[in-house]
Image (cartoon, rainbow, N blue to C red; front, side):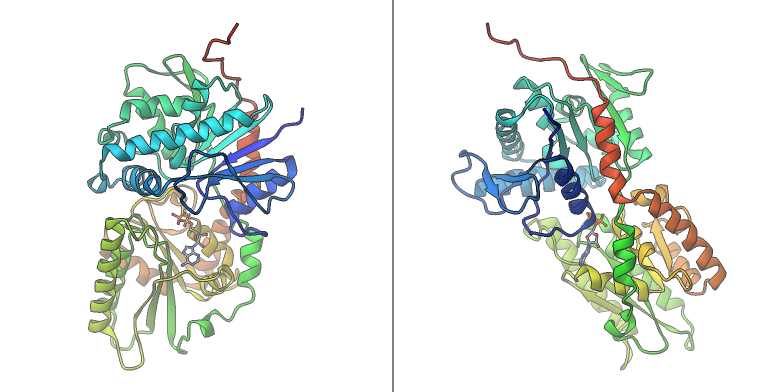
Length: 462
Ligand code: ADP
């Protein structure tokens, strides 16, 4: 029987022609091999225990969705996934909202997905599970007797050892992780944190081949840095005209920030740094305008409402201090922008500011580099706390907590000589090309295919 790939991710793209690097990469890999893409249905329903719902649009593969009840959407998705695991992994244990119902819903939903999957599997299927919504899924599949190879990719940072202590399910987290054959993460630093968690446990062992052993199970924790479709982005950027789109004056430089409005993205610090940069400007300096595009996300979670208010207040007060009749130094757009428009804006920006406080990888950093004109490229300012900083060392690397350092980096970026900009950009582009998204899924799957098969966990009847 030929190999099928079964992808599980929270969101299944419903559009006929998918866009976005990751979605396209997974779509291509499923179209080539056949298989199934399973995710949460976008509309909660009281009848969540029924079967899977078929979704239209797979090209040579199937798409299906499991249902969540409205309570499960609150408790599993907004609750455990986004108010416990998200802050835990992004070093914000102060924001963790613990509630027993959240953990119960997380377990219930994952067990339901495991049952759906177990019913449809054939022995050669490769299972590839994505992200923090499904950490226990392999454990529950193994409990149902599934011995297929199961891989996982964590798109966000692996939590720091000290932070894991804040998770009531910290002991179970070890069992969840080790039930996968391959546990993929974004960076070497994530691998180190993953290994550290097991080293710190008395039942954890590091094997000579680098795998982790824990109570009879083994897992390979490895980094697979994710990338973008470089040519697609560069192509879209070449349409140009970004300065006109942004309505820039002749003597105005553009600094761009593009992020979901999330507390992990460090947007208030960036805006403060921009204010400090403005404070240091002489009266005859060229004007720089910060365009911050930040569409809302998870806006029913309190921490997200707070960051929205904080940003509105900051941008408003800095503009009050610095604006002129014909110039608004900070422009804040609280909605999404089409990708082609983004690409053109990136190309028009003298500086890309990507300064998250914590981030698995950060694709905006790679998109900004891919969109530049190699003859006259802009400068990337990147915080050391973005996963992308591990390889993109030719950016101006800054500390996202140190606003003055970021203001100084802005000064340096905006006055950087052409030769240095070209040099840095050439090296950055080479790095970005090395992690092209098309190779990423192939690398992961070939590593998963080579994993040793799991031993059966339940006694067979008879
Ligand atoms: P995260 O997955 O945490 O949101 P990434 O930087 O890794 O962060 O990926 C964000 C993706 O969303 C990028 O591809 C980026 O282009 C896109 N994006 C972010 N903000 C916007 C926006 N305002 N409009 C359109 N796309 C956006």
